[in-house]
Image (cartoon, rainbow, N blue to C red; front, side, top):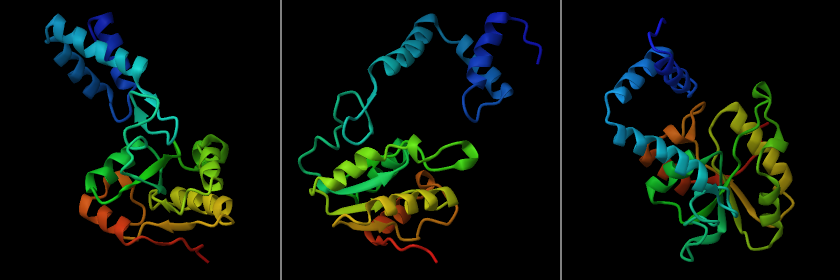
Length: 203
């Protein structure tokens, strides 16, 4: 792709570095931005700078927040004895949209995937173990994607948590095998949470 401007080419390269954005799509977006006013571009660019400067991870669950503790963990009306373990913030957004879960979350940040070089040490697991040790938790829900990597992570977490006096459950299989949690429709996801089952090791 022969772009007649070095500056435009730089923008295309940056946009194309985003997941799911090819060079043609990046060029289309860059040309759209080029036609916006300078004030609009300044606002657009500044929003990224502010995000990087002010957005942080919750010191309790790992959710995205503007304050040290996220609005879910700091809400006294949430059931802090019930923890839902998810891969990332997109899963929290999907579950919260169902309005059927009243506990709190724990974000792993990833799932175990040897093919991608991601092992247990790369996940936010230690703080989950500490929560289980506290004696304040009565149930931990595994709400990871119904994939081989998700099941592997569930099994690893189960081995770490099984000796604590807590209930370990998982979503009912209303979420299709092989699908990622964030793409499940709200009704299916809500039913999967409500009808969660005790976690069992597959033979």
